[in-house]
Length: 253
Image 1 (tube, rainbow, N blue to C red):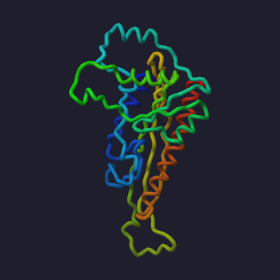
Image 2 (cartoon, rainbow, N blue to C red; image 1 turned 135 degrees about the vertical axis):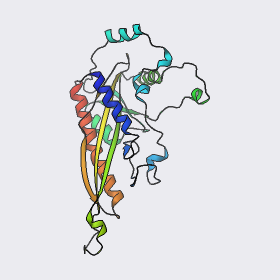
Image 3 (cartoon, rainbow, N blue to C red; image 1 turned 90 degrees about the vertical axis):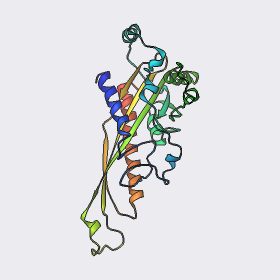
Image 4 (cartoon, rainbow, N blue to C red; image 1 turned 120 degrees about the vertical axis):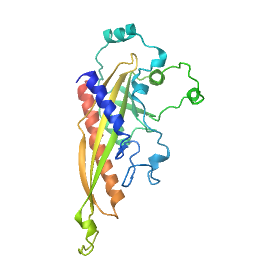
């Protein structure tokens, strides 16, 4: 897959985060219909501050100045990224203080992993209206990794997309159902993930996108929240394992 297609897929995943029935893996608590938004029962929402921009992570900040010569030099020095088994990796989940435990566990089967915050950094100078060129965030990011002794950073983004369908039993009150409640809603959910593997020394990067996973679940008014969160955990476990295994296969882990 070309870098253009990889970048396009990354852009599509990030764009999906703004869709009305999509939520970030970093803000995945129960959020009832009709639209996904802030909900007090979602503990993540208390500190969720949005996603890391692709430009934040991968570079391309025009404020630092870009020339055709620099672009040509970057192409000429491009090299394949490799990750040996057991390599030290700084793992970042966009939008989260720490990577999800399931993702860390999946990655630890291949690498030595340390988690770093993926909460977007707020530039105090920018907040005050200072428009002078600053050091790009992507370089600050790589410097932090270098100080920790990491030669590779893996940043991943993810969305959970849901669709709900009412079924006839919602309108039927006379059907007996002993020992439980009648399921009245079906929820389809899928997870889409994308990871960027960044060489700390050069800033060069490649991406990997595993196949999405989908699940269908029936629920009623009494177990809607529990059913939703079971789906979230199931899809995260499957998606994270596929992402970790795919990274190891692609990059030589």
